[in-house]
Amino acid sequence: FRNPDAKEFHYFANMEIRNNLLAELKKKYLNDLLNYYDEKEAEQLLTILIEHFFEISRNELIINSNHRLSESEILKLHKAYKELKQYKPVQYITGVVEFHGLKIKVNSAVLIPRPETEELVQLVTDLETSMDLIVLDTGTGSGCIAIGLSSLLKRANIHASDICENAINIARKNAELNNQHILFHIHDILNNEEPLLDRNGEKVMFDIVISNPPYVTLEDKKKMHPNVIDYEPSSALFVTDENPLEYYLSILQFCEKNLVLGGRLYFEINEGMGDEVVSLLKRCNYSDIVLRRDINGKFRFVSSKKGNT
Ligand code: GLN
Image (cartoon, rainbow, N blue to C red; front, side, top):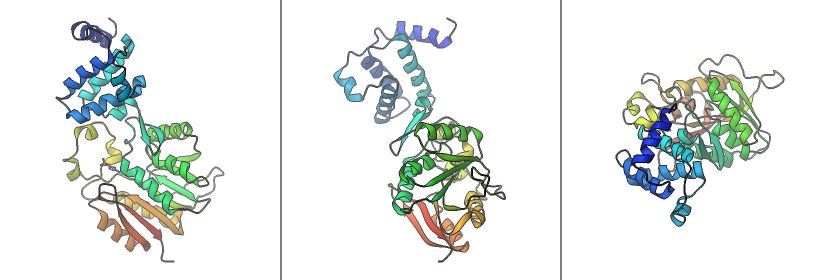
């Protein structure tokens, strides 16, 4: 065998799997995964893989327990199962996540979109009803916020930026995949002297700036699961314990020159940093500052308006 995976598969197929029934393979994998995940999670993970690779839902598999896989299909599932055992997040195995009803591709250059961030998109669309808004999502990663907003705020003009070129590449693909027009910028928010330019090379003034920047402290990191720490891009997650608000400070600095007076700023935040972010916004002369909870009851978002008018 030239391909070691194929060799392993044949060994595996001969020794352990006497047939190619998907339901039986699933049972076997489920049993093995119990050493790594609890039963409910292991079942969910396998269901996601099976739905993704073979387009068979959990219920269909129960009804049609005679579904057989080809060798290449078994190999695919086996490879994914091995990755699960390494705690690779299932979203990076399938390469796709559903976000606000949209399909968003992900790879190791970008954070896996979280349900909280879907809530942030919903919050902005609930509050922002005027037409023709010019919006920036800074630190866009997979592009999920920008693309979500673009699909919901039909007439808005959406820009998205990220320091990471690989992130911008996948965000661009995601925008295309979801038929959304977004202007992407490779831009370091920590070095924000230069303005962002539109297609005509003119400086853009934004009506809304939104961001889910890195906000996890090294203290928080100690409590995190290895599948986050080992696989997700640390540059998208972590801040130093000395300067945990670094990104918020830089975004506010950027907004001094690039957000219109009366423009709105929306942040996703670390649940433990609500008070600090609110005081920071007050100091920078923002008004209508509202700290908001996520579905888990944690203070996760802050909305505010530039100036006091
Ligand atoms: N909410 C994410 C997590 O807990 C962190 C997102 C971020 O740092 N912006 O993993």
